[in-house]
Amino acid sequence: MSGRIFFEDVIRENLDVGRPKQVPLIFDRGGTKAPHGRFRTRVITDGVIPSLHMDYQGTRIQQYHKQGPALRTETTLHHTRDFYIGKSLRNLPALRKIGFQAHRRLLETESITHDCMLAEQTFQQLNLPPIVREQRASALRFADPMVPAIWKALLVFDRLPTGFRNRDLRNNLAALLGQPVEHFTQGRMSYPLRRLRLHGLIERIPKTHRYRLPTLGFRVAMLCTRTYARILRPGLGLVLPGNSSFPSALRRRFDKLEQQINSWVDKAKLAA
Image (cartoon, rainbow, N blue to C red; front, side, top):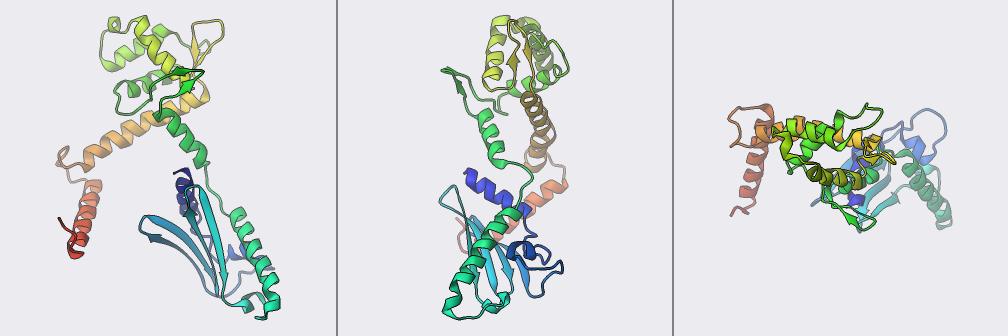
């Protein structure tokens, strides 16, 4: 799964790899002037499996996801004259060298703006129960009403030099959830504090009963709070017919997509 996520990011951020200015970086063509000929970058989907294809004159490079974690790169040279090499069999080592060098330069040229492997690891860290030194804590899921409230409550403590206490978090949660402070006893608040600590989102200050919010905790809380408040909750309200009768642009796009899928299924005689 992580390999597939990585490859999809590679495709999305390297669609210009087949442009004339990029080709000299891959095939080591001399000079700064872009070479002449056919250049094309395509994304081809077979079922749900995408592949990235780059054409340079009679040469084709394709990349695709293989067997879970692997990203496979294949190069096919159809016209040896594109590289000023003859068609004799004795030229095979030279063509093989061009192919291997193209693979290496392509991988060096391709880039993504973030490390999606680490991002996926952090996402799973939040959404799966962690076990730290034989201590287990439940996952932090959006569907749990307590979780968005915890994110909001934590953001208040970011700039406190001495950290925050059990009582501080208790007061904020009570206000956010609209419940009396008396419902959030010190013992009841020990569980969410332990939960956050095992997830690595808060740190206990040594020799005290105070906690601090590290960089990971602040950024995760900020991102999750804004994603929930500005994308997930209003987005579901706009696209689901039973939630709103307002004909928003997003709703119209989903309706059109559903109509097109149903039309395609009917034409293919696959309707139930």
